[in-house]
Length: 435
RNA sequence: GUGGGUGUAGCUCAGUUGGUUAGAGCACCAGAUUGUGAUUCUGGGGGUCGCGGGUUCAAGUCCCGUUACCCACCCCA
Image (cartoon, rainbow, N blue to C red):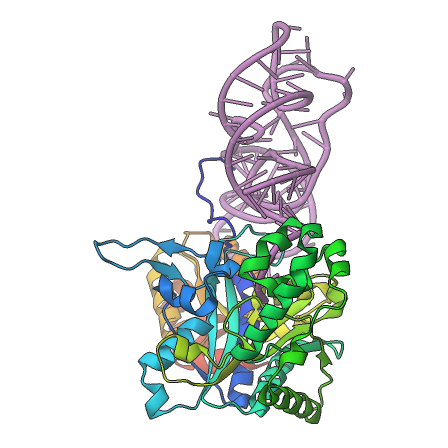
């Protein structure tokens, strides 16, 4: 492995065909569910003007602060671009730009694709990763908050996760609730600030909410008796949360109401939730989401309520591997696509073009997985190749066959071989493949 | 950004207290008489031992630096 050889950029990886199968399985599961829930796919650019993200995610969020891949302006007076670190901001931008607020305010969308964050890679975290997310715009009904949670849970259920899936929910209130709460928090924290960890001291000004879930023990102890947001909630926020919980239960889910859940991005309002798979231990979060009623307005549209979630495939893949998913048979349909069905063998040099023509005709007739030798291998080596590839049938052409207008059809399982008249070959082959 | 671990062929790894041309398995390629896939056999390609410096008569093996990857923290999907 020469050190000057090119490598994929840090935090990225190549998905070779056999590995890609697993990802495609996740994608198809997501798409299948989206059809059931009647959410439509939207694709936005992989990069946006940087200010879209700083505006929507919050200047002080870590994502914006230090994790963006940013391309400087190329021309005088131009704008910097950034690769999208998440999907919600782009969706909201597209919603506004597409005229949805006035022409079709209610939308149920999903997106699926790569996101980029400039972070130190580690287990379950990459610089380029795939997210599946949904966004519902145009209704504040808490039934939607519950539906979105239901959707995410069904996704994991479909992948084979058991009933230990855990939904943790909380409400972050409305902006006014939070202004009141923030003031109370800072008031409460200011007394004990000197005794806290350096991170907490830093976060005190820009994001005091984060002191609540600090992992340091002494900080946790100092949080005894901290004022709760719940005490500051306006009536509408409380009612919304209760209705959300009631609907979740009606859908058969048992959420844990957990006031310690505080999501990192600024745009959340009211409902926030995470889905965990506790067997994974510390890193058990598979999905995060919530409501962001102020976001559309923030990016320049008419005030529009919205709710959604995002699932990271990297974490999902790891979680699946740890619990022995997916079951091998689940991937069979995908593996089938990589499988050689028919391998075409040429006996002599003068048979190469005719065998290429036969392969071409088979492909045109709709036969899948038709392959042949391109490296001038001997007949023996071609058969070996066919066997290794798992081909079910071999079509063999030599001078004798061509002279007589036959093609030799070999069943690789039974080793039976028959000379078939050229005109009957396709149906005979299809017949063999059907078995 | 901080801390820890690792770095020998495409892959998984051996390489004894520093000592002759650096090994194995798998994978790959070719051959074992004239047009056919098991197993087997034979042969072959492929590594400046991550990179740079130092110690030494001598370094894959010791020391320093550097880089890449992995893991943890921060934060998050």
